[in-house]
Length: 478
Image 1 (cartoon, rainbow, N blue to C red):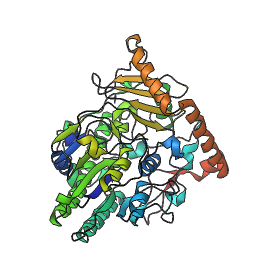
Image 2 (cartoon, helix red, strand yellow):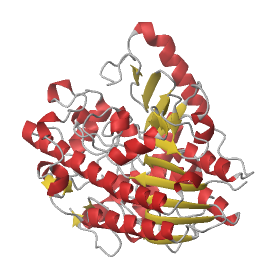
Image 3 (cartoon, rainbow, N blue to C red):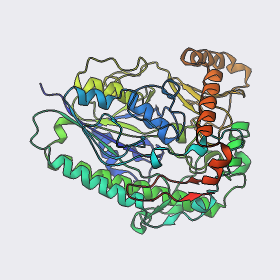
Image 4 (cartoon, rainbow, N blue to C red):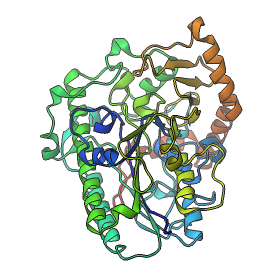
């Protein structure tokens, strides 16, 4: 019996709460919601790292960031560590890529049968300024936040082209006898927070919800987030109108993303491939949208560390919600399972197909962050109810997600939850020694900084806010 084809769609920076199948009442993602109705939604899905390059390297290899050393956006995947795409290709399965990879270079053997208009890190280098951990440069991002609203961007044009290429690709596969895999990687709703007027017109900004702890008086005062807000130029709260406009633009941008995905789904059905193809949708990390006073990703809170994860197709229960904790690591095992490969995936990875067909399983999921504007590494450990956010050299945080899904009540110092805290810390240390991992990340980053001439040389070179699309030049800032 023929194995199912596999269409894997990955977006960039999609907050799961901005999706109908995750509770939004704004009809922001009608095509993803339709996918959810004919498949399974994972309500507790997480990134392995809430920033692009490490998350994508971990996704490729099925390994944790500290196991592969892709610490931040200056340590891109280069194909030297075997990936699930290598495994599929070398077993005779066509696995093509369309869109954003954020790996080192197209010249590397990244494991794909072909890469179609790939987006890789700038100059094969990425963002080494993010390696400055003690006294990082101030990232002046207020203008991009305050000027959110109507506008066209190269990211939107790139995603339209990516969807066009995916449609052409599917049309060429309608008569294939052998199973195939396509990795379609879109870049929206990643900032800039701009979108065409017609997508903004779908939403009344006054009806859009605000995220947890968006008011300055409610911001968590843990030193980890104080450090982040300082160096992201976010110590002063943006105005209510500015935040409302940004959230409005983000909803419009997410609706734009869904429209491109819908075009691809229509082609899948039109080509007679829907019944023989499993479709998996996720994103590399979420988006804060002003939660805790932050914008972008970078944290392990649900809005940033949590991700949407939806799978549908042959053998997947329809209209199903699975509460077993999962992560991007599980994509690795899912691909092996789908194509019947014998090579064992990461010991902590599980097939999403398998989990979708089971009742809730007791499980631990792990994530970490060692990138820009973090003084110390932070680590996520979550089970079916509790979440531990462990900060190297600082106090941890503990949340009861069943009672407190917005994560506003830190239980880490509550003696009634001391046993839960210690249990999760012990589970964390089974995976890694967080202080030792933090030291290794910082040592590798210092060495990289020195290889580029030191801190001052990097500061003079400047940084860019968003990776350019193919053919576009990066716009550096000082």
